[in-house]
Amino acid sequence: MSRFISYICIFAFLFWNCNNSNKQQVNKDNTFFINLVEQWNKAHNNKNIEQFRNLYAKKVLFYTELTNNSSCIEKKIQLFKRNPDFYQLLNGSIEVEELEDGTIKCSFVKSVTLKNKTNDYPSYLVFEKDNDEWHIVTEGDLTTDKNIGKKREKLNNLFIKGLKKGQVYLYNQIEKGSKYIYQSKETKTINIFMNNASGIDFKEGRNYIQAIFKVGYEEEKLDTGDILYFLKKNVKLVVGQYDFDKDKIDELIIALQDNDDLGGISFFIYKLQNNKWITIGENLTADGILGEPIAEIENNRITVERHLRSFYYQWTYEYGSFKDTGDY
Image (cartoon, rainbow, N blue to C red; front, side):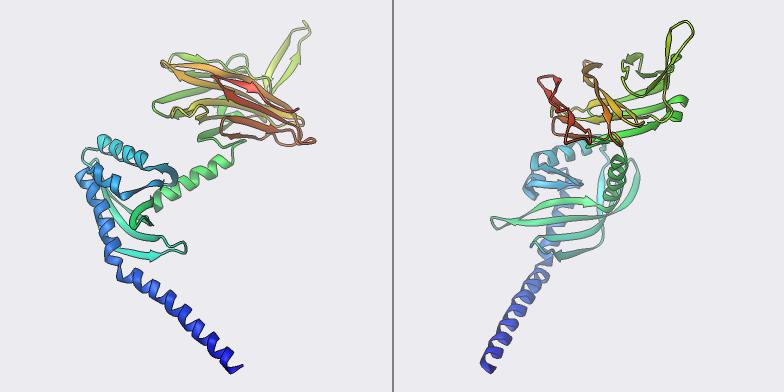
């Protein structure tokens, strides 16, 4: 029994010593990782693209976006082009810690000068070893993390899940007039307002964007037999963006939600070509939905669950247009 206890004690000592030596190794090599951070900082100020190429791994979580080495470098090039006066300084000490997965996280404050203004950003780089070389697998800062977190929380409140960017508008916002700023390779302002027939108009520059929805209206029959249609006051409008064809230029999505019993959603989707909005998805309509109508975009599909025996509406983008792939 005493021999068994002795073995346990020896094993525990070796295990503790092994873990402790790993931590000592990281502490011993702090200067190595501090030097990598300084190289990264120097590459910014010298606009040294080749140095960035050597520092980044093949795959990088770049300010919360998973991308590759070439894309990271392209983003740096665009940053320098937009801001010729760009300069950054490492402000204070660099903290080095080993994470549970064996990667090394370096935390520091960078002072960034843009357009003659300097701001401090608590930042971090995460390094991972690959073939005896350490490369950056994560780059970020706490300010960007917070802003993107707010943006994602806002997107989660939309009735369309999965949008890259989007905004919801209530009846009173439509009635007063609102704007949506489309931002992709180009920036466009979409004006939203109520027309004389109680419908919704969308205008970008001098051009109207046609969208006449099949949901969200109530009708009133006149003595003459004519029928007038009025926008319901409980509707929600979403204007947003998503890149269905993966060409790095977002399509524009305009959708109206009718939240009455057995309500629905109607979608219009547009592609920007030669400075004109071309309709690629017209009045894609899901109606008769039990509960709140919610849409989800994933890859090249839009899906709306009916909440009835696993039935669903679905449209799939293929060869320049949307095909009905639902099971009603």
